[in-house]
Image 1 (cartoon, one colour):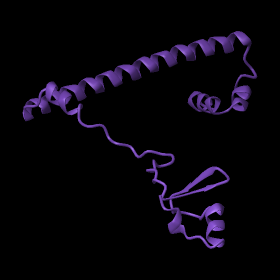
Image 2 (cartoon, one colour):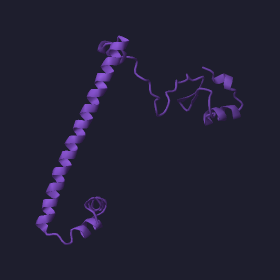
Image 3 (cartoon, helix red, strand yellow):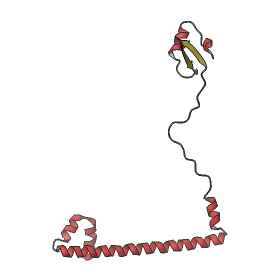
Image 4 (cartoon, helix red, strand yellow):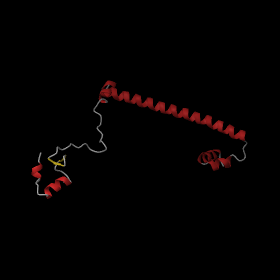
Length: 138
C-alpha cells in the first residue's frame, strides 16, 4: 500500500484510519496529525495566493477593457443607482371595499349589503314577506 493511497483512504473513512494506525504509537499518531495540519496550512496559503493572483489578473483585464471602451468607475457607479427590481408580493391582494347598496333596519339594527355575494338572511326574509329589494336601496 503506497503512502498516497493510505492517506487518501484515511481521508475517506474512520475505519481505514483505524486500520492504518494499528501499528503506530500515540506519539507517532500525534506527530502525523501535527505534520498534516502544517501541510493543510501550507495548502490553504497556496490556494489563497492563487486566488489573489487570479483576482489581480481579472482586475488588470477589467481596467484595460474599461480604458478601451472609455468607461470610468463613476460610470459604473451611476448605473448601480438604477430602479430596484420590483418583486412580486406574496400574501392576500389588497381589495377595494365596495360601498353598500342596500340597507334594512330590523329590530333597531341596521343591516347593510353591497349587492354582491350571497344574499343575507334579513334581506331574503324581507323579499319572502313580499318586500322588494328596491325598497331597501340606499
